[in-house]
Length: 73
Image (cartoon, rainbow, N blue to C red; front, side, top):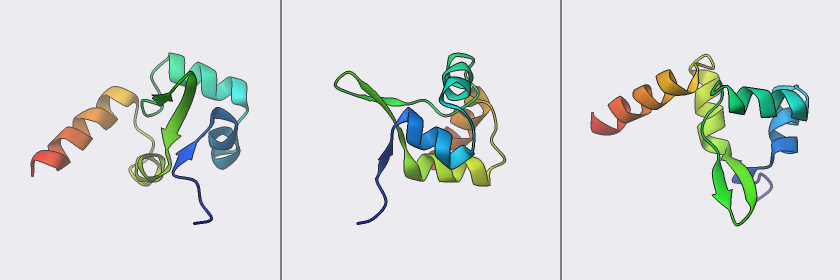
């Protein structure tokens, strides 16, 4: 498997063509999907990030509401 399932902050920044610091600010202001913790590390699910991008990069509240609706249908 060549693609990682979980992305570090640096990998997410590279994927989105943003700085790591911008990713930190976007996470703090809830503009990107919720990360998961793996021990002390923070990671983002690649599949979720790809779906989020395809959905137009909505803020976290809207994104989570969409995901809940899709899961229940």
